[in-house]
Image 1 (cartoon, rainbow, N blue to C red):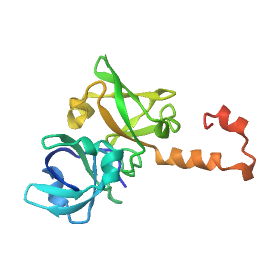
Image 2: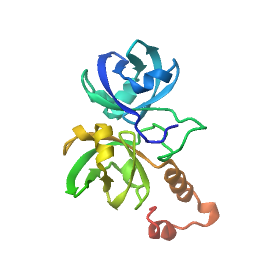
Image 3: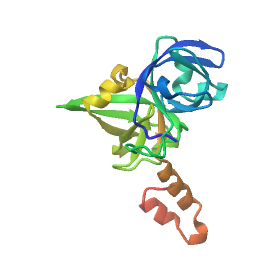
Length: 208
């Protein structure tokens, strides 16, 4: 499990078959074989550790269902190690299980920050609520004005400088993971006929 607080930006140094080798610095001091690392929001397992890089192995399905399949040597990626039980929890519960690939729809400067708008697939859009949580390429962000299949987030300069968003442009793909709590509530209500939860109730509250 992760928090969505990015620790550093890594760089892909090699892609060979299932292997992705990633150049890193900050997280290397406490990285071990078998550890979980979120790479652009995708939870993967460390398979090898070298002097200044580590290797993860990616299944064909993960390559095809996330933005990892587009990565090449030289591409930057967001990195976060799995959360520690005794550490400060600053974001939200992020599993590293990508729900779908969205894209950057618009970027609007608003003084000291920018409003970014993303288009989301149905597997993500159904869970979006105002002021709810969303992970974009592994970054914990707060949903602003969700409308059908789009939503906004406010990006402060610090987030822009410390993540790969600084290199994104309109039309670029991003990994999206909806809030796990919202997903559980949604599916509980959708299957809650025994508790007399009606279609009218679901529709009125945005779950249908």
